[in-house]
Amino acid sequence: MYKWIESLLKYGLEKGLIDGGEVIYSRNLLLDLMRENGFEAAQPVQSAELCDILKALTDIAVQRGIFEDSGENRDIFDTKLMNCITPRPSQVRGIFAEKYAQSPEAATDWFYRFSGDTNYIRRDSIIKDRKWAVDSEYGSIDITINLSKPEKDPRDIAAAGKAASVAYPKCQLCVENEGYAGRIGHPARQNHRIIPITLAGEDFCFQYSPYVYYNEHCIVFNKSHVPMAINRRAFEKLFDFVRQFPHYFVGSNADLPIVGGSILSHDHFQGGHYEFAMERAEIEDSFTVKGFEDITCGTVKWPMSVIRLRGESPERLTDLACLILEKWRGYTDEKACIFAETDGEKHNTVTPIVRRRGELYEADLCLRNNLTTDEFPMGVYHPHPKRHHIKKENIGLIEVMGLAVLPARLNRELETLGRLIADGADLRANPDTEKHAAWAESFSSELKGKPLDEIREVLERETGKVFVGVLEDAGVYKRDKAGKEAFARFIAELNN
Image 1 (cartoon, rainbow, N blue to C red):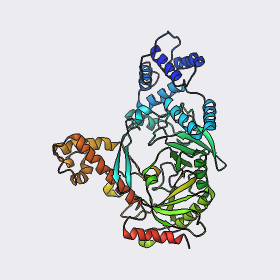
Image 2: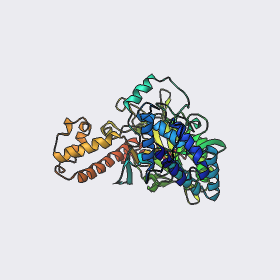
Image 3: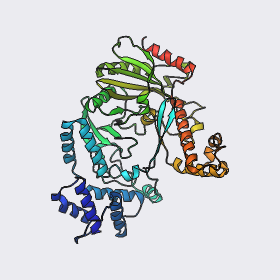
Image 4: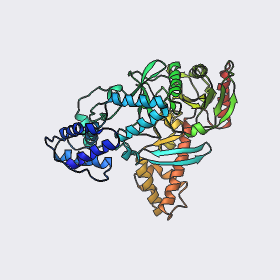
């Protein structure tokens, strides 16, 4: 135990999380956590990785009966270990401010590295994610299978069923998560640090996503637990963020169920330092809106229906974005199966993304509609049933921009599928591949006996094609002649 404690202290010193004068203090915190009253000098384990150190100490804690062994309990405990060497929030904010005075990029570079060094971003889990790119008519599309979120431990599921209901913090985005010890069903955040910022005069907070779907994946959330809303204030806050962090993009999920994100109850945005395929996509058809001749406008060559605005003035862009949103909120085109509302339920909204292009500001407004029908009870503009074997979850901001976040089950299913295809086995006889059989049979006839690496490459390419189809399903205007004509009718409405 002592050698692993010394290893963690050595790690903290090397990463600058503690200094030499804090070693004894931090050691005593760790000894207390391990329920140890004494200490014997020991040498750190040579070349030990952080994940190895935390696992060793967590294993010892289990042996000592400090907590009941389960996946979530282990995460909670190793977060407590990291808290013993993580600087206080005021220290972190002070360093961020010093770095920001040098440049916004220096500040975010430091904070992103810090968030990984403190194990808030679990790098050892992130590297498990499976990632590849697929060429399409819309450019190179990013595909990821998310493996960084561990599967639920049955012991945790059982414990959650017995636990008393707790409404604190109200959600996983709330500012009250900073330093929270965690419980079954709510992750520990004792190593979590938040940077307060102001957006358009409102108190917001800046942090990184612990799951990091792309480089420097950040979350910008309202200090108050208030619902998401796409309106003028949302556009003003998005533009203010890229004014303060010009090297980042920022966007918001839509504010309606089905087409919105997973947490509509808390006002937040997502951003980062990454170029998505949608950003690289070109304007396909340009147009001008009367009274906004100073702003470049166009529809984007993209599977979903996107209007791009570009100009020098965030205020002018906000005004035009509000006009487009207002027109879209009330827009109905029965011929195109677009209804502003049915039975009093509103259906139209947008997914906005904002970025800088040098001195210019750019906004992409992806038109969304959450209409459901008997044929498509999960949503007309939602992944259609024939693609559910790959993706049936909502299409949120990240997918809109061209990065597939596919469920962890696919990793196992695609691996099994590859082996069965190589063996020429019946794909319909295996529960992991039955749902994929019709799809796989359409391209696998020549793959029997081929090397698994070659089959895997084909499966990845074909999975990417399905995701492109998912985005086309989610587009309110299809890419055919009728869809383009219907899109043009809405654009014409902007000048009426």
